[in-house]
Image (cartoon, rainbow, N blue to C red; front, side, top):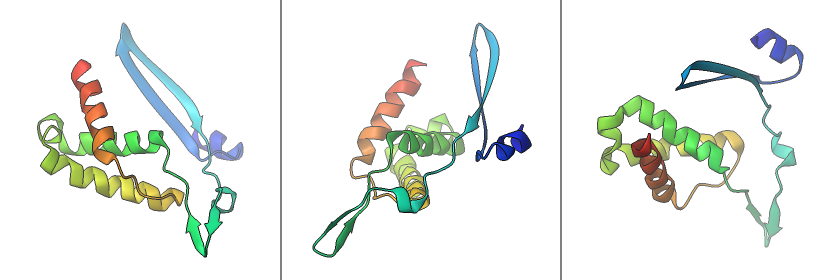
Length: 117
C-alpha cells in the first residue's frame, strides 16, 4: 500500500481502527505537506509572521503523548504537559508554524474526550 501511495505522489498511508460493533479498519492515503514556500507569511517592519499550527496537528501531538505516558500519567498535568509541549514544538518545526499559546486548553479538551469514551 505504501508503494502505491508513493507512486501516486502521496506521503504514505494512514490506518484507522474503530471498535464499536466489531473491528473496522480504514486505510487512506496521507496527503503531502505543503512546501514551506506556499505558507502565507505577513511581513511587517522586517518581521515574518508564521501561520498557526493546525488543530489537527496539536491533537495528534497530544494523542501521541497519551500513548507514550499511559492513562494514569496522562491525567497529571505536571507530567503530561511538558511532553505535550515538546511534541507540539516538534510539529511546529516540521510544519514551519508558530508555537501554540493556549496548549492547556487543547489538553483539557482532549482529557474530556478521553473520559467520555
